[in-house]
Length: 426
Image 1 (cartoon, helix red, strand yellow):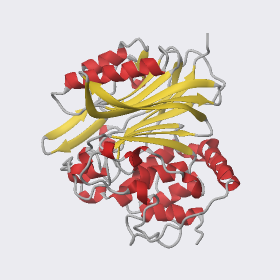
Image 2 (cartoon, helix red, strand yellow; image 1 turned 60 degrees about the vertical axis):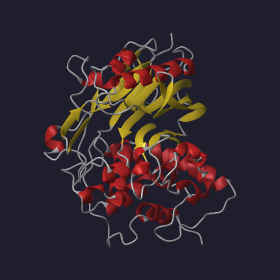
Image 3 (tube, one colour; image 1 turned 90 degrees about the vertical axis):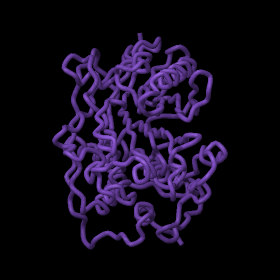
C-alpha cells in the first residue's frame, strides 16, 4: 500500500510512541528564533528537497509501507546491538539506500515536530552575530553545524543528569527537539557526535531533506552496556547534495601511542558547486574525563596527521568539528592551534579580543556536581576561509538553574553554527 510522504514522515516521528497522535486542528504555535525563521523560506533545504524529489521520481522503485508504529525503516540496519562490538557488525558502516522514500518539505517536517512538542516550552532564542570579513564574497556562505546531541542510551541510562526530569529525556519528544534545532538553522554541513539513532531516525529523515550522510560508530560504544539500547553511538557527517559532491571519504579509528582507541573520526573531501572549490570536512569525538589529557593529546596528533595527508599538506581548505572533551588549556587544543594546517577556532571570534573561547559549550549537573566547560570547537583553515557569522550561545538565564538537558533543550552540549566563505585564491 502506498503511503504519502506526509504519512511516512508522521510514522517516522511517532514510531516510538504508538499512542502519540496529533491533536485535532492546527498545532499550537511554538516561538522560533527570528534569526532562524527566515531560513525556512530560504531556498537551501527547499531546493535540496526538490532536487531529491526529481531524482526519486526519475527512478523506478517500490514505496515500502511503514507498518505499525513500532516498525523500523531499515530493519537489517537498525537492529539493536546487545553484546558484541560494533566492529563485528559492518552493516552499521553502510548507509541504506533512501530512494524508496519520497523527499519531504522541511516545513512539513517542522510542523510534525511542533505537533509532537506542543506541550513543551518554546525553543530558546539565539541570534547570529555578523563578523567582519577581510574580503567580500559573491557566493552564498557555507553553513556548518557542530553538535554533540547526547546519545539516548547514555542520557537515560548512564549520564545521571540529576536535575533533568526523566520525562524530558523521552526519545519520542527529544528527537523532535533535535530535529527542530537542525531545521531552524538549516546547515549545509552537519557534524554530530553521540548519534545512536542514525539508521532509524537521522539517516532516513535527513536523506529525504536532500542530505547525504555517513556514520561511523565507536568500536566499543558505552551505549551497548545500557539495557534496551539502540546500538552503538558514533559520529555522523551530513552534507546537502545540491551544494556538494562527495570526492572521497575516510573513516578513521584514532590511535594513541600506537594503540587503537575507542574514539573515531570521519573526514570527507567535498566538491563545492558554487564556487567550484574543494573543501575537507572532519568530525570527531575525543576521549572524555579528567586524567586522560595525554591520551586526548595523542588522539589529536593522530587526527592531525591523517588530515595532513587528506588535505595534501593543507592544499585543500579544512573544517574540523568536534567534541574534543578538552578545555583550551589542554595540549590537544594547543596542537590544533599551532598545527601546520593553519587552523583557527571560529568561536574565538565572538569574544571581545577575538582570542578567547566561549566560557562554556556544555553545562550540566550530575551526581558528582555541576560541570561547566568549553569542550566543543569548529576549527577552520584561516588562510583559505573566513567566518561570516556565528550563532551566539545560550545565556545562563536561558539555560536556567537546572542546566542541561531540559524540556527546552535536548542535549547537555550547545550546538555551534558558523557561516563560512572561501577567500579569494591567490
